[in-house]
Length: 418
Image (cartoon, rainbow, N blue to C red; front, side, top):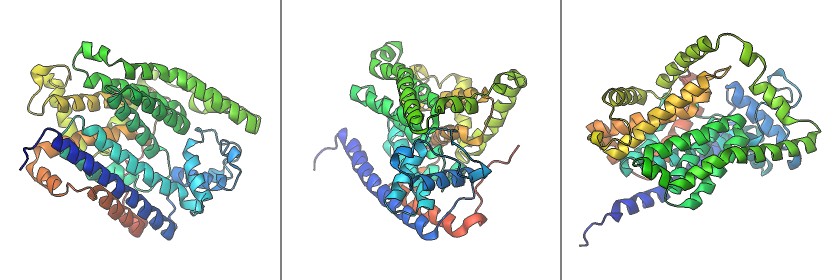
């Protein structure tokens, strides 16, 4: 019998990944069939709006897809310039192929969910044992945020999948420079889906590089992903110029002028006290960062508190590697730093919404789930028994079917309004 080699766990992880991708592809197909068969329509106002706009676009010439309108939805008329039109393109294309137009956006959102969960596992596998990382594929589906956004048609899962792709590409670009193109592609995707929110891409990519570096010298040596991050503002300018030119050619009016008035109105600078507003928003967001990743936010909070108090969370400090090891410390620092930076940044904004920190909820949930799997023997044993390629996809199908069967009687665990 051959001796086990160091490559054996990697090969098993690669084999499991291939099976997981195939299982998720089947799960997305089954989800699309279920959504179409039940003619599902979300009670969430944003989802209903996006599904309705995508359905209307599907019957128009493709050249007009860049310029959606309100079409009476939300009792509004005129051009829809809240965000670029990226979120509508795939649903409109799917409806054009014959899928029921009112449900197309929900089906596409299932694909974004699958992509996000696969990418979470890939990214976590670089800082955690592969089996623990694979368990995230089903553990994160049990968080409150996953229940709240189970079948939606809004931007959040598309944004999350693109951000995770950018960070995963950053990890790969540390050793394979060609992956810098993945960073740029993911940045462009966020830009075309959520506009100015694309600023979180270079932020999270930069934090990942800091977390993964083994000292300042290593940080400088991995220069390729830093070049990609530095190029993102230039890429944003080019994409914005091209989008504006195309929109102006189709409609005869400016997109950016209306978009700027929506995202940064004059009142945003003059209205109220910046310090008071920021402090209130920070507390408002902190409550949601705790709520939505439950139950794993409790464990993540303990990790953050212990790490900051003992100064053991800093990824470049080998003296504080601890029982979890240096890679786990890197992952913990990235999760904590990303949560603090993004929460602080959005607290400065003139408006707030639960969905703005959607990526943070999953980062916190992943940190807590990995630590819980490592510390709790019963959860580690369950993760071992469920370490099969098809399990995350099967959990998804069961939970989607439950949502469709239960309808409004199944709580979505959204945070109470304030």
